[in-house]
Length: 221
Image (tube, rainbow, N blue to C red):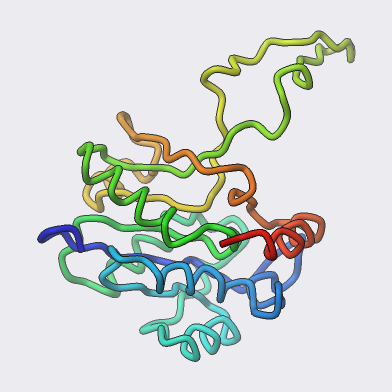
């Protein structure tokens, strides 16, 4: 909690995955991948309540073992591969009820994000009055590596505004529930970026990305 402002964290962890099957419960550095997000949330000084939104009994069991038994199971119509995450967030807010000043979304596919990243993003939103804050990381390669390819396949160097370019890394999103539900996105006008180093910004969707995160774990902390 920040003053009298209340913070709800939502971990959206559906069971389906098209490219890396059951990735949220896949062992990573000795623990199910979703566990690393739950442990980062445990270390947060600002989260007042956390809820795991899942349709997967395996994810629910892991969350319960770590102290956050899901108070509901996500319905099938919100759990498909094309189901918008914002709909699952809305469902979670409705199920939990109560008054919340900030909702923090922590995707379990970002296992290297830390409690300090979570709290830093929340404080940025609160200190500035921004409608939302989105975790971002720098481009993974120096400017010399980027260019453009035209319709004929010709490559031309440059063409990217490197002073302004950044990647949404998926690690942390903070928003004000009223604005979030009105706009159906964290990318509202006036949203701010929360910069994170590339090393903590991996978003796991493939076996290669999973392997990179596992290799980076000894260097975290």
